[in-house]
Image (cartoon, rainbow, N blue to C red):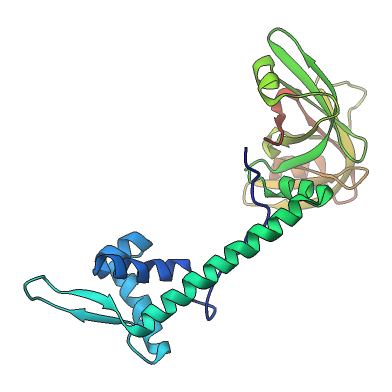
Amino acid sequence: MADTALLGGQLTLAGRLDARFFALLQGVADTGSISQAARVAGYSYKGAWLVLETATNLAHGPLLETATGGRRGGGARLTGTAQALLACWRHLQQAHQQFLSEHDAWLMQQPAIAGTLRRLAMKTSARNQFAGTLSAVTVGPVSAEATLVLPGGQEITATLTATAAKSLKLKKGGEAIALIKSSAVVLVTDFAGYRLSARNQLAGAVSRIERGAVSSLVGVTLPGGAVVTASVTNDAVSALALAVGQPATAVFKAYAVMLAVAA
């Protein structure tokens, strides 16, 4: 499977002429119709005219030649100025893609950097994402259990199906990312002599409290610097008298942990 690109960038000309604008010009060149070109480029008809008129005013010259009525029902075509702009864009876009490809290949040859960027590239709604190394993987007939060790030495245990563990090819020593929704995290400030059944209990100190209209996001910083975020009600924040610097333990069940591994 091809590696996911680590390097990206948007090419623009004059700070405002982007790929969408040139898709509009290309659409006019291909179809001879502004309305059809607008649909191809994702503009409304009015929006297409607006961007073309703005570009025309700044270019001090027409970008389109239009005709109305007639046997063929009118149409539009690019002027020499617009054709030159489009040719310039094609050339620069090709050079831009070559630049990205060459430097992406260079990044792939830097294992430590590439690994970090791959982890950062994953987009997910889970507030908590922790990268680590699998210290234990146990696969049973139906379910499996995997333990991830974080750089700070803390352990996160995940419970998943045996089928999922085999599909992910989980193995001891492999790298993985643990994903936990903030709503699955319970904060404990005083165990009062009780022990909890939840497998994951990460002790740290409250480092951030962001109050919302109904709920708050509370960050608990662990030894080593990792931060676990919990989503709790404002009433709970008040009841626990949460404050920055206060010791707290982030608690979540093993089945609330989702594991991700590089494809």
